[in-house]
Length: 295
Image (cartoon, rainbow, N blue to C red; front, side, top):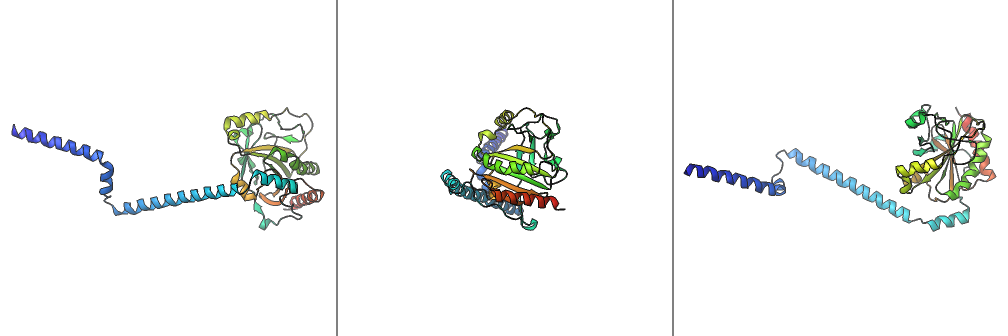
């Protein structure tokens, strides 16, 4: 009888000890260090890396907020009124390839929902297109211009020269058109030239997948019956956060239009802002001709 009582008391003690350890699990893990000292160094290193990465993200976020607060809509409007959107003057001569800026990657959508990554810089440009581009969809456009096409008729291989225009607000569409319309007319029969008109929106709601699909569907128009030229106006749309994309191209004013002439390697060889002048148009066409002659 006495022996059974001792066994019962020992069992109850082990149960209470186990529950205590479970309740004080955090405390015991702190007091009792890992047996392997190497694990201490690894844990400290991981913690330091996490802190550094977190601090870098915080610093980057603060720098962005400070940068965006340094400019306002009123600043952009004053700049537009004083300089007519001419944030900077267009290049008079072509930029050398060795010192030219690489155009940052930009994901754009056609009105049929197909996706393309600009710039297209290789003969295997099909890799830049989403699989949905392989389907033969109706020719669509945002405007009634017959020289407009979408992904199904768009050539995906790289061109010797590509003009990419950017507009962040509807008010800058006329400025963009002052560049693209003469360019389209001058190189209408050239198969080595591409023309992209990109409309960018940073609004969170419009960037949602469902809203984006509805918006692109709304932009569709019937297929034009007229004969198409070799060079087509490809109107595309880009959704999402473009802050770092704008930083790379030094775009600060969102009320004006921008035009960039790229070579076959995706380098910016010429650029212009605002509404085009006769002198600037002449330099654009001349630089394009130079790119077409490059080997």
